[in-house]
Image (cartoon, rainbow, N blue to C red; front, side, top):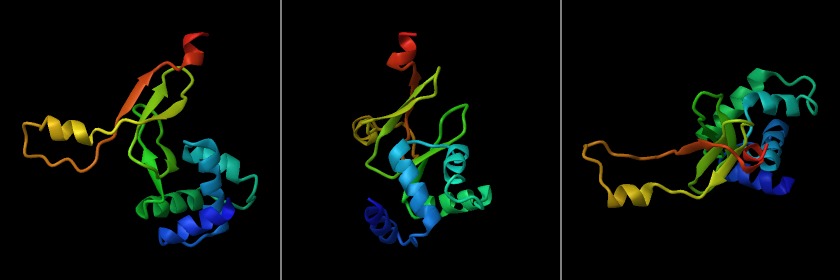
Length: 136
């Protein structure tokens, strides 16, 4: 698995530093994580790790399209490994975030907006209650 991260980081023109490998592994294992959650997990492995180092690495990894930011309304952003276009479901109660295969590009092709604005990217976050919170 670690060799896959090393290869993937290099494909994105990133050095495979121990911190970037740890960020990659944490995101792979947990899916969506905030900077604070990443820091809490990584500080156990790197006792001298600073929050600034996490921010710096996240920023560089986003610039190189290795990870992406998921902006959740009324909450801190979370980060995930970059993958095919998708949207997100967010539980209003427990905060669970799940991926959902919804690509809006075909919709915009069939339903052109009545504007001259050119859409390059669309992000959709749907909120509600996960099955666990519905049953609680």
